[in-house]
Length: 298
Ligand code: NAD
Image 1 (tube, rainbow, N blue to C red):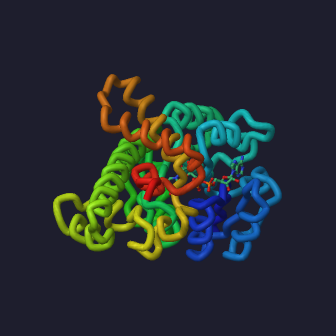
Image 2 (cartoon, rainbow, N blue to C red):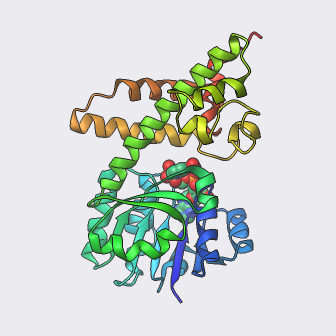
């Protein structure tokens, strides 16, 4: 039986671990949150008391953590670095969205101990994590990419090999920068239509079937009530937090600066999301950016 250690059972990691258990893997789950552990247990995972307990002797170690410092701390320079206990034949698959430099450094630290580490950030949101239809964007060697297939296929639909270590993270921030621009544009257009008397559902359908169609309109409409299962219809709870989108846009700005790539639209989107966070909305789903556009005097 293949054992997978899963560290980080939040909005994304929780349902991903549940899908691995459903597919027949033995999943040893760990999170700092007791509530997340309880949910994982109810979904067929074994619960570990520490990350070390989860990772020891596991065949795969998957992490789904907020940022680069958490990933580095978990594997390399925390109190109990997992690279001290992971067996050499195991493969570490970090699905968190982090900076490419940290991904490369952690991969190098693993390689020194004979442990494979690849970056495999995801796209598809909480809905994709629950449905097992995530897109994985992998940075690592051909061998690691092949080794990871059975576990990635249990959680996702499209699995891309972007290139060597760090390439998955670069591709991921290109995608999320574009997503932030599409979401801001979608909020802007729907708000203008509604202010001019249009029904948001009718306008959304028109744009979806026309040249303005995009992912936000297709599966993540930002206007409450238009799409039953979208975070907008659940008080912007769950989903992908504004804080995480701002993190990703910061990573995109770093890549832009390091490579002298102009990103005027990405910079504008970053300013909009930061302004929205300053209004106290950091923990809401990122589609709540609509509120920034809405006329509060009405
Ligand atoms: P989240 O905040 O819901 O979950 C993070 C989890 O990690 C929490 O449960 C937290 O307790 C746990 N954690 C933090 N440090 C830990 C540690 N040292 N050991 C064990 N557990 C620890 O975040 P999320 O929305 O699940 O996002 C996770 C990652 O996925 C982020 O890097 C994010 O950018 C990326 N991502 C999120 C989405 C989305 O739609 N939410 C989509 C794609 C990618």
